[in-house]
Length: 109
Image (cartoon, rainbow, N blue to C red; front, side):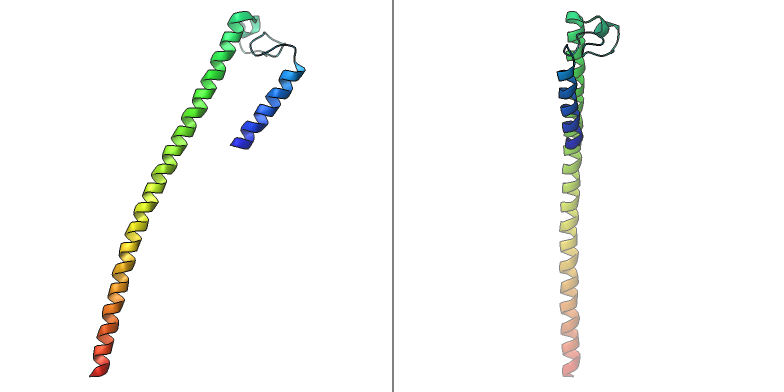
């Protein structure tokens, strides 16, 4: 995910260098065709571009938060499974010890 983001950032930087204007400056000058407001350029175009950037920033931030929470839930789940497996392992080892004790008792008779 980061490599795609880095590539997009690099490409955006390259496009910005080759274009005469900035984000929201109007069609054909770096703003691209993003709708009538952005095509017109000026303050409204820049404001719309800023809103769009903010939207995608918030969306990516929310996605990362959701991913982090999902992974934390998986960690808790696997920790619980680990505890259960330890308890089962302990029971099996105890049962093996009991069987060995019974075998020794039978061998003495």
